[in-house]
Image 1 (cartoon, rainbow, N blue to C red):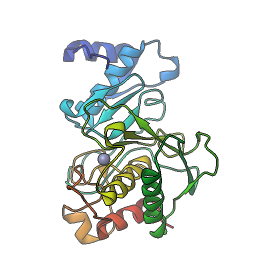
Image 2: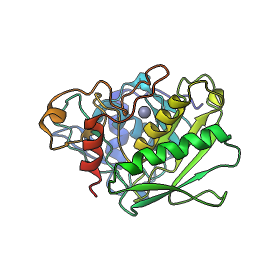
Image 3: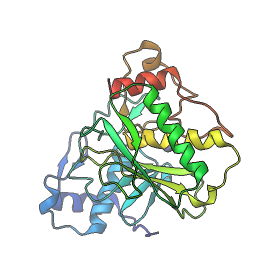
Length: 269
Ligand SMILES: [Zn+2]
């Protein structure tokens, strides 16, 4: 894992001034045209990390870094490569512990292909199928289907094993990058290839697919609030939300009623 060099706020702002425009009223770093920015990757990474911590309020302790992406709160992958080109300024005024969403969503398709790599064992494969059935039964504006071939998909989700060291996440899902497709990866932690509780596997995949379509963790300050147009859901926390940050032990939970309303608000039929 790449080790981050800590920048002082002053040096970070100087870098930002050199290659970006700073909205001083909100202290928001908004690079204007990253395709022509002559900044090196490290600076780009620092700017993303600064945005994640200073503006989106993710805790620095909850951000890990790999070469091409950040890992937020153990299981959300954020691609570095096209972060600023697809960046959208969020309305961060409402800091409520409610259902939350990412600034990029799935816009290009209503049917998201899912490729399960050949290495994935039959139990995880079945769990992916059951997770897909759970989502599809909600009858929302996006659905998932498993591709027939063993080829990876460039316009959908790829499910595969990854060596995640001692990471406690059972799996990780990638948030949409802004190209209109779902986030392209679900990484299954190789430490958890064999789990005893099957329903936890289904729960995990269902949760990660939520990230792949742009849902953030419920009852956090991640991203922006996802309004459901339901008074109770918009004004109360949702402790049993399937998009909650922590997986209850041996959880067999499925969507809460507010999970369903949140999904259908984001992706109406
Ligand atoms: Zn998660």
